[in-house]
Image (cartoon, rainbow, N blue to C red):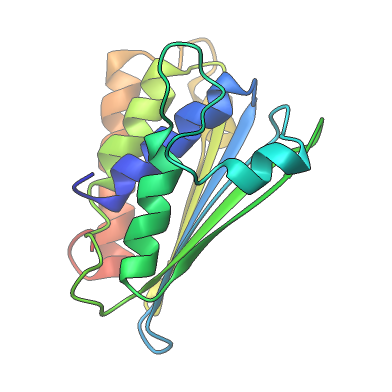
Length: 184
């Protein structure tokens, strides 16, 4: 995958397939400690310990539509190429957390990508799921929560094109403030 936002999209889709109703996405850019940390947490059905052990194996998948599961294995490889790692924590009936850590300044680290488009796409395609996106940098913290948006738009559906366009713009503007002009 070209950028990290696409991995986030893939993992969030896994969460939705696992019946998650709330998906939290955290991005921490810590230049001082040379770390970029991505965390995706859901309240889906979770996985048993045996499945968690195999989840980064590219030849293991629970899907019936294909025989390989590439998302987490590719994320794991990308993190390791930057001196980082991927940790998956899951409990049946509770949910799953995927945490990926990268060397922030590593030449091998993929760019973060367009988080504004990623979050807007997730909301547009999954209007019944609540998404919480929190992004921390040395310049500050940006937070977006669909539950807050739902309260403000009242009867308008969150997947309405005008709302989705606003969500993308809102996130883009917030990231410009804390990232100094754009996504990293």
